[in-house]
Image (cartoon, rainbow, N blue to C red):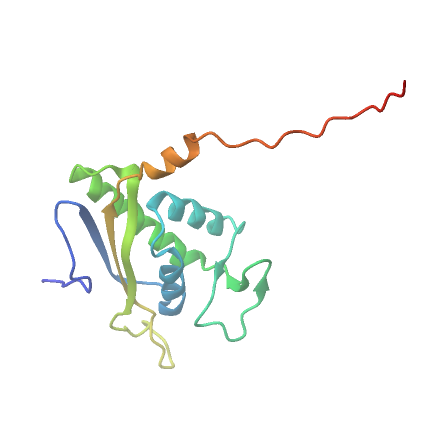
Length: 172
């Protein structure tokens, strides 16, 4: 079965991609995580998601934040453990795909990440009607070159201000 990606600007030489189909996670949590880590590097994203798994950091909720408790310095936020674990696995998979293609895995940045609603299934054996949560998640990463302009600006000599010296007044 063929699966199309939502991202159309795919360059095969510089990019790697992965798609997770029918993952058993909440769509709302997945959307918030995807919006938060979009544009970051893969290393930064994996480190932050690891902190969320240990509940040292929270995912800020911007869209689906009705009734969500506030966290320090970020506002409304939560610790969506199950969705974070699945997205972290997808990040590791896309990193392996990039390594297989010969890309430098230390300079990968997330170009595109999104979550879509998948088809829902009924819970087996339930007396009442209840459906499972299913989500499709796709990630596209690109190899970025580290800019040398940052290195040049940091090597420039900084002008140091003269230090105030203690002046002793001597009288003759």
